[in-house]
Amino acid sequence: MTYVVTDACIRCKYMDCVEVCPVDCFYEGENMLVINPSECIDCGVCEPECPAEAILPDTESGLEQWMELNAKYSAEWPNLTSKKDSPEDADEFKAVEGKFEKFFSPEPGEGD
Image (cartoon, rainbow, N blue to C red; front, side, top):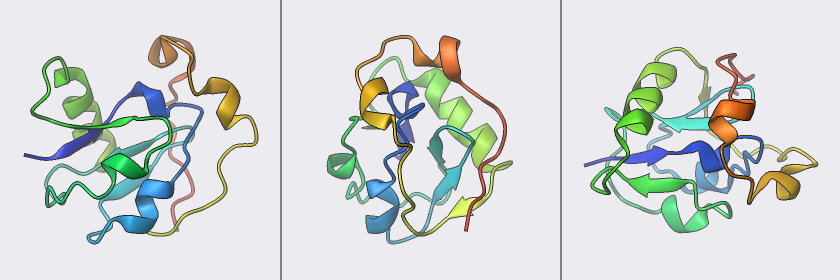
């Protein structure tokens, strides 16, 4: 089992999860984070830290798209091991539905 980041992270990117991850398995895109499934040790400490509730265990149903997206982009985006400031408008996007279709960017973030 692993944890995955879903579209609830898009345009929020709070990064509280990054601070608590013991294995540094988060990778940064332009407007969201992903978890590398082969590095995640399934400790679960990141899940309750996410204010947007964007992190879920892969045992929940309907997460196939997010498992694929996390695997794909964790191989392409830079690693992130320390928390940065969230976007100033993060709270405005916290409850927005359909963020993947509206806002997803495949561009990498800066990483560490």
